[in-house]
Amino acid sequence: MNHEVIDGIPVFWASAPGPLEAALVFGCGVRDETLRTLGVTHLIEHLAMSTLPRLHHDHNASVDLEVTEFTCSGQPEQVVDFLARVCTALGGLPLDRIDREAGVLEAEDGRAAAPQTGELLSHRYGVKGVGLAAYRGPGADRIPVEAVQEARARYFHAGNAVLVLTGPPPAGLRLPLPAGERPGHDRSLPALPTGPSWRPEDVPGPGLALHGVLADDALRLALDVFAQRLRDSARHEHGLSYDVAGACTDAGDGRGEYTVLVDAREGQEQKVSELLWQEAVRLARDGVTEQELAEEREALREAWTDPRATILELGAAAARSLFGQPYRDAPTRLAAAAAVTPEQARQAFAAALDTALLVVPEATEVEPRLPDGTPVPRHRCTGHTELPEGGQVFRPALGDRLRFSAARRTRLVVDATGVWAREPDGEVHHVPFDDVAAVEVRGAGRVVFGHSTCFVPVVPDLFANLGPALRAIDAAVPAHLIYHASALRAAD
Ligand SMILES: [Zn+2]
Image (cartoon, rainbow, N blue to C red; front, side, top):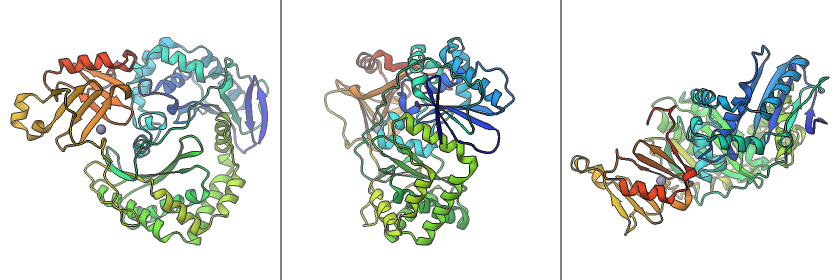
């Protein structure tokens, strides 16, 4: 890999066959946002791309949890032109186009992670950093223009960018970005205090998250074997599912979240969820074979040494450099994988299973147990089953209480510390006022989102005579966290 500097921006390049490919990588993504400003990076990306004329060569832009990239491929002069235009646009965003691009973003509904991964990350880390992956945010039309300007100034400049190229920098290449200081990232997210647990969510299939060290080659290889076993069993043997996918998400301090997701054919959610857990326990208990490890090493070798992967490899090196983290090249990673023994893989997986979070589709009931027989509990939002004494109590309207037993058991309590709600099944939700991530105004009501993933709907559809509750919320929550529900979304 070759290193140069152009206009103050590091350029990493390596020669690969085919047309010249380029990626201008910025060290910012969804995990740098907050629930209140979720989508601001994507909005900036769209505003910059909206300035381009019609181009006939491949070009694109994307925002994921970690980085924002502007990519293209084509003739060297096309690449030079694209990069100059993107840099110029980022230096002078067309803020008057926010309304139009907000509508485009809403239609696109881009997600930074698969649904199961998003839910698992928010279960682990709460509604912040990578945990934001599960959320839609307020809608692009509710992001204040000041937040767009602030994020632009903080992240989209020469101090926070790396360019990667699959060939030497072409003649005339300029990167006219504004100057800036590399932003500090508070990457280390404490995991929420939860042991192994499972919970149902609105997901298309089950997913499993294990917390571990990012450079744990034994755990990575064990997870590759695990995913392959699920493919063999859920897809090929039983025809229950189409795809098994894995992801690894950096949560700072060299640690992160390994997720494995399986989709499920309609009606097969229960079976696929049970299968996922059974296979996890079997691997932790009985381990993997040398032949399985050899298969996965071969798959990695194919993927990592394919010349078409050059741009991805360069992009990974760029990201590590932007975050001041070490980059291990493909030969180093392959050598590390070659040294993993079956027993190391089993031990790494078994140890990580103690951190398991399992998410299953709604209405799926599972009874997972750890390899030693300990039951894995269903996650509950709070340890409470009773509402606090002394607050103001709100109930559903009398008519609803007379007709529905569920309404008779539903309660909302607002006290000096925050909002509490009890569902008909007895589950108690709580958002303390000092932990509010955002408040969405829906009609005459409010939905209060906490950083813990708990949220409490304080809405007239559910509770009667809410005036005092609404006034208490508006008085206790800072105004900048309160927004009106997006005009681009149908009320749900
Ligand atoms: Zn809750």
